[in-house]
Length: 142
Image (cartoon, rainbow, N blue to C red):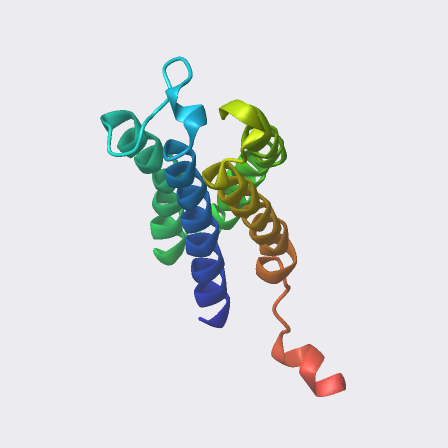
């Protein structure tokens, strides 16, 4: 049971951090470019639902004792780790180049730091959630 709780907490933390990155991205001047998802629009809510369902649906199946879903969550986690460094880079670039007169966009800086923290949480998910259970036989000999 302890493994399920650890996987659940870290998966919800990873999904929550990713959703925070998306909400912070919708508050930046970068959201006004092209067809960006501004705060409160249906596009922002769709993106948050899309990301969170990628974690929550396999997590529900994992709690229903389909333990292969742990590997599905690991794949989803790895998939969302790929864009996070690029999001952070774009945020830090946008913080200096999106506002006139060389002013710094604080919302872009916050989004960049949230992306880096989210990347750290997603990286830490693997060693924390991939720990092997010790069976009772190995405990006898240790």
